[in-house]
Length: 112
Image 1: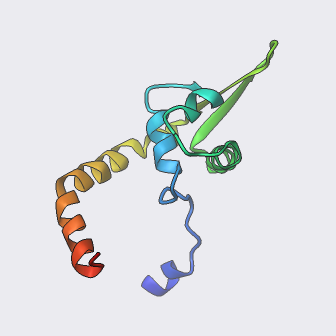
Image 2: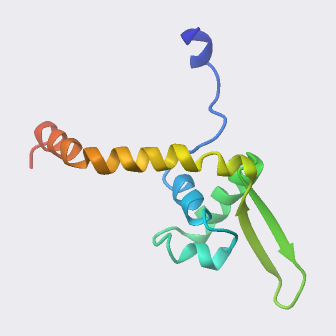
């Protein structure tokens, strides 16, 4: 069974640098592109666009364009995207509980 699974391409890229952060930013509801850039300090517009497109492709977010001047676009977690909130919360809780241990292990492995 493991051999078969090892050849499967991952369905989504939750482990990349930005996807989990974007999911957390959209947890409270829809946000505009510019509203996402504020809490995601350091992300370039290009990378944010590419990540949102990949998340939309994978069914994790919905993109809604509103006519007007200027045009407005909002991104929102889809029902599928919302299913990732609990696993992400568990991952954050684990990281918080074990951060000191991980940092100690890193220091032992790579002393300054």
